Image 1 (cartoon, rainbow over the protein chains, first blue to last red):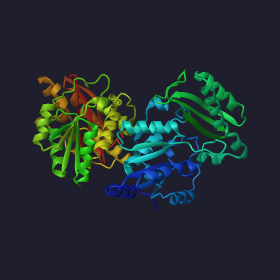
Image 2: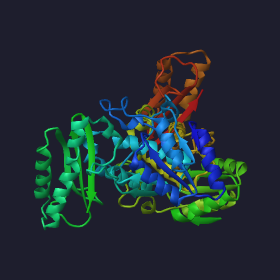
Image 3: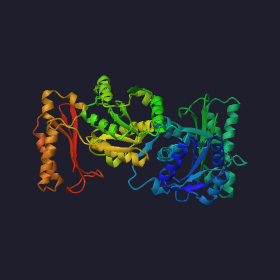
Length: 280
Length: 280
């Protein structure tokens, strides 16, 4: 396995892979890899001849008051995980390799899909995500790219971008990987102290409570939202950013629960913002 | 020569050209081809193995009050010109092939370069240009693409986009082709009646007058702008949209004429908006 930091070099490597008629996969990450990432890497490894994992903490997708500087970084551990998982290349560019001083062109994603959920409390976040991915896809031109379903909104927006800009990469969403108590694996879980870590299971538990109500026949989104919210509010360390029930295709809020439905939430546990979701 | 209307088909054709190890050029146009386009096509033809000319009147780069519906279209004449010039393929998609109903992702170009010149009177124009070109480049992935220097701002913005989004296509700017009286060739010249056609030569004449002043030692942008503007104002059919003197690299207005300078103007002749420029 090689770690590549230059755009020119990873482009050349990717071109040679394609010239050899081999299929090429990419798993874009911000590093600090956990079992969630590992599941993407494993799937990508199985389904393709060659595999590039990008590790890039993308400054453009962080707001000015967010955790860019403190976002956990551990290239050594990441490299070991990748090596053991059979990754061929890590692409690990510096920020100024991706964004030289003159940088000023952006990919602006679907407004309808960004004016809700994480897009409200993180303005510009998905613009940053789409811009860096458009760049990666243009440099590496993978046949397939793998994303976690945990970032359901990101996955849907990226799929739309790829379709709209004709980017010719197959986007695969992979199931959420969870801790034993149901907490979705996330690099940001590292921020949690012991009490917060215990409290954090409230996200999944509350979603499951809502799901139970739906399974019992509840059709009203508002009722289910109330159940989920009031359950989260019982947890003193938790502060709701949003809980939403949406049509998964259009990302519009729905009154009645029918068809393809996304229940998504973001909750602060102490200072740490965590997200989770379920598609039903 | 073949005329291709489907994205899937032109993508396959382009892929096969690359697989054969041949170089591929693209000349993006809105059709109604004139000698300006012809000069791009001839240069592209000489420098590459295969050549695709796109003919697509891109709705996204027209404002709501602009001339999208009336923009001249003549596929038959365009096909003849392309055939005679040795073009291999015309890519001529329908608008809904490029922009299906759900379309909602945009490429937002450099704000500093769009908040001036044509970007002021045509808000959203360069977003439309960049979005459609990013799509074309992703579908066709040409080695080289050719643009006229007449649209100097477009050329500079497209170069910046290609660099910022790592699009891996070489952008070549080609000299302005002119009528005998100096009027820059443009599809919109067809809109001019006889009197307007005569009046339209005022654009080039006024630029040359400014240039003469600079050659004689004038260093003040304001003085040169005054000369150009007052000369245009002598023409009764002309109405100035803008006359600007900019640093060609940064697109910032300059007080003193030194370094790489762009003199650019847009002038209405009757209802027809014409542009011209010179780089010194």
